[in-house]
Image (tube, rainbow, N blue to C red; front, top):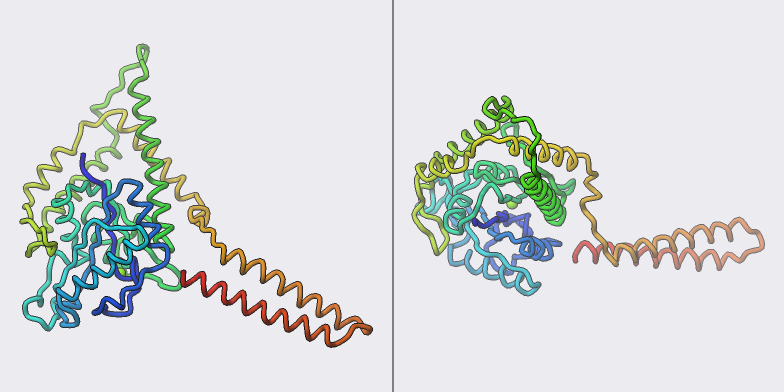
Length: 356
Ligand SMILES: [Mg+2]
């Protein structure tokens, strides 16, 4: 059985992106990354970073420097109990200033070269895998490789889209929500598998024979789409070996065609039912409110809320004193002072929460 993988972009997906990172001290994990990776690991996924590093071609960092940066990243993750399986990077760029790296490459996202190479080296089932990233280049690479995709984008850091960019399978505001999406999808998939297994076991002695040879157009289109997409993979042949230390030569389109043939099963009624269930599942997912998929409890957030209520209470109380002619003005000043101090506490709680 092949492995399932989560392909992860690096900059602004796992770590902060200050521009070009050329020193390990610049590596700073984004919030929720470690817990997200731990969750994905527990769900049985291989974790693979695929990152464009044109900084090498631009002369900003060397490959040895990049190795140190990645060791720092691995160390930070390990410190929090998280880990990754492998890092692939593409050092090439057509406008680079280092001749050795100045070229276009099928490894460079939006091309899927890094994902395809990882699939070969790590025996990954691409159709059962996901690509998570903060740019449409990540989404395009994931889709070309045949993975499901999640674009991580938020109001603070929106992904810039052009007219030709593909539409991701899902969008998430951060990696935590992306993990929830994968988890929900997996749960539904397991449900569908269980349901179909149970259907197989049901005796149907009185059932009318169902003609499967004249499958609906929808089924034909589905298989045609799959076939065309897989055939497209054959065109994406990296012109260079993969950057991983354990690189192996990349096989040609013949491999992809062979796999394609293997994965076109005969159409059955059961397949039809599975597709109906899948469509129902997609409708259900679309209908779910995104906020309900992203549960996050923070003690700091709760504290900030409680203190904010006290601030409002102090202000209302001071207003009540102001309107009372017999009340002392010093009481008003005291209450407003308390309100100001507590409001600062609220701001501090929110800042601490964001930095967490
Ligand atoms: Mg990125």
